[in-house]
Length: 202
Image 1: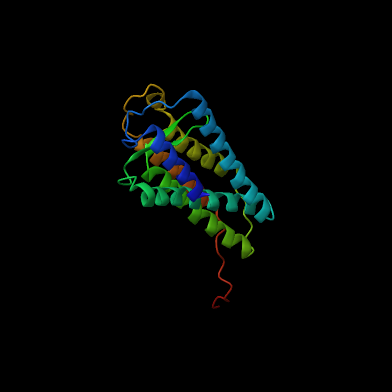
Image 2: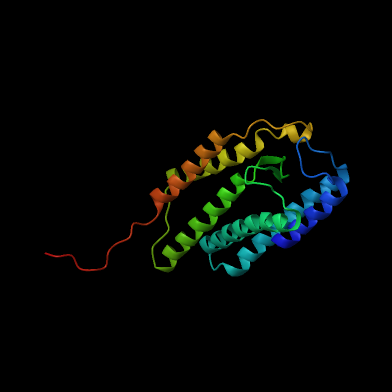
């Protein structure tokens, strides 16, 4: 999926951005933008389908989706670098997503999110397979959702620069960092505490 997605971007660059992906962006025709939005929605549907097929319950489907999403996102940029030598660095800006509005940010930000999704999902899945119950209070769920919302806000808050074809404002690392801290904090606080099965002296 990452290969296919990056191949489509190679075609788009050849047609609409022969001089490279630089801000301010060059506008694509409206019908092509609609096709791109549909393609992104189809990608999410495919990832959900993989999760539904491989997961045995809600938790495992969530883990499969998160791992697949993270791997797909990272290797999307790997293949783009192989094909185009782009992005030039992890701080290169990109249009990350188009639903419901354009998401903007340096490549490093979604890579951080993807790595967090992969590592946390593998860890929680392992705990589940070891028999640890995965139970999070409403307060922890609220913190995790708030953190995720802040991360999304950091990507979407300046979407108008993509619409108006202007240079984006500096990335909101403060909002992004706060969101990641809240989400990861809720995860670390809510994971089951390991119990040492060895008998204790005395």
